[in-house]
Image (tube, rainbow, N blue to C red):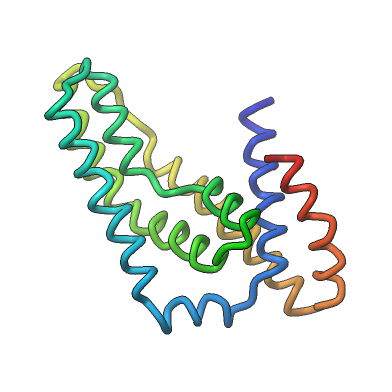
Length: 174
């Protein structure tokens, strides 16, 4: 149930967010890239380095250490977008960070995961379906947001009515 229900719930939430976004929202983010570049740099570089530093200072058993580094390498995910949305924050920036970092994750996640597994677990390290995981993340984020944005572009009044339903639904699903 969780394997099917959770992705569907997250896709519903992302669709609801897409209903409130336009292409102009994303263009505004990239026309003022300071916040985007800062957020991306902190998540892609500083977060994994901070975890590695903390593990150097406070060593843990190998599986936990590898897991913490892998977790630090993962994209922010849908939850950050949901919380940004509920806090009336810059959803376009949050979704942009999640989407771009997920795209970059095809490179960063395998490299950092390989580092973590080889340095903390050695030859006993399990294999992770990273490509499958990243594709799933992209499908849960990108497709529903794009569909919501498409509905908004094609029929603004329908999108606004749907947004009134998806706002409370997102809170309930969360």
